[in-house]
Image 1 (cartoon, rainbow, N blue to C red):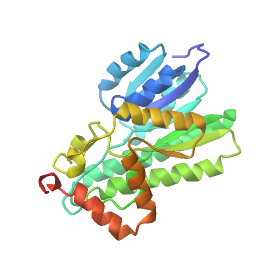
Image 2: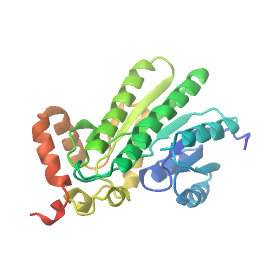
Image 3: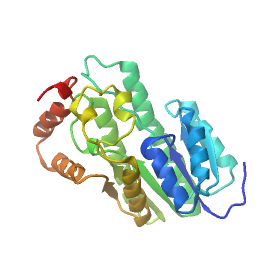
Image 4: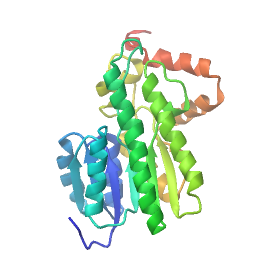
Length: 267
């Protein structure tokens, strides 16, 4: 798998569709070779589309929610023999519904993917980049990570973890040659809401941002060395600001009105 390419090299997780796929395209369009990963077989089609942009692309179909999946990715990256110039830790899922009724197994899988695998990969990526004295890391968090998220309680908590981890590492690594950026999208037109079981919510049926625009915002912020970017529409920036500034009970009530099961039916 080793190559003599002189291009920069990036890994993108959750890259078969949605924001991850569009992030991989951004890297390819800006002269990077890629290693892309997702749990579904769409990753092969994604690799072919990205290769058509002129990048060398290696791909793996594996489940990063499994501890062994993270180790397989690390081994595959090491087998390329290439220094890792950038990493977009993007893989994630949601679970929607009343906490008393949602499936614990699905929520534990969410934590394993959104939190545990992100931490595991970040540890590997940071250590590799420290050896070479350079690198860029993009964590996909969410504006949900700035606020209480009733009916998406575990998802919001997981994205708060990712946001906090990103900002903490940025400070620790500020003099190392490694920059760390948090990408914080709002509702985006992907399979996320359907997969999370949120089709009957106001959030699930609302107008959403274009994943290509979200990815462009994220890539540009990463390359500019910004600490974070609230990507997509102006509405997202307002919601993120409210998440920081308003009392948690007020924000929780507003979010519940958008995310409660059956809320799409209510006026």
